[in-house]
Length: 417
Image (cartoon, rainbow, N blue to C red):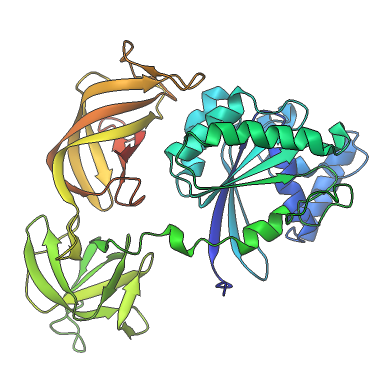
């Protein structure tokens, strides 16, 4: 049974001109998710540009530079709803120099849709995007073999691309890969099933997204509750109330559970789990709640409430797969602020172990300089312990960002190995 309000986030990736923006435009257009005035505006712009019909790519190419060049250079977020699900789309750019934008758009996604031009097949850019999707542990990949109308809807061309991609994905940590042949321009297999490809027995893209099982994507085993703030209303009604508020990162918490507060290590039992409307017997990720404990323990922002029999590691030396996001290169042994859940600490990059050559996906050990869009494995030392899980097990407690103290810019995003 699907939760009708369940939110699915998906990211689109592909080479330049593979038709990502057209695909999203088609998805919004055919699922009737566009306002009349928007549609009117796009029709007028399409007419001015000399197009016969509606240029669907204009629905997502919001920046003026993008519209003029007909390409996407920033992450564009789009929202739409069907009777079965809510969706957030991150439309990410295809160029090598915008690798960081793809990492940003894909970091919270349940699904990565990778577009392949049927005429060109699996190219270097396809491998790069599959690698980043695998690195970010996106649970599901949909390979959209687009522009099938330009290869006469050939089943042989489609099968060749499927075999090529399966060869790549077999070396990666992705378990669920699906393939859909389509023509985003003509609407084949996007929202409606294609009459031109009767040989394809699968469902169109929207149906696949609506019915895909994503409930198990959240880690329900490791109970982690990073404390964001302490609630002390001190009103007549709640004279002695002391609640620890935050968002459950993973797992399930129940009234009466024995819990430990980290890093102090003090234990207690959950007295109540409260929301604005009611008290709950149990709560799970990603709910925002306030938890009260039976004992008075000194807890503040940055602490983490966990189950006593299942604790994360509290460590100061962490190995991280880092994507450098900033224009300025990393300074050797410079100090940064590291943000992990609700915990902020000072940190230093001790060592760059290796970098990935994003074109060949080989490890580079002799060049240790970190520049924009570089993906590398580094060793980081923090001033105080962080309560971490590996990113593979827990995407929330396994991720960090680095902030430059001088400029307050986010300079890197990382996944704990």
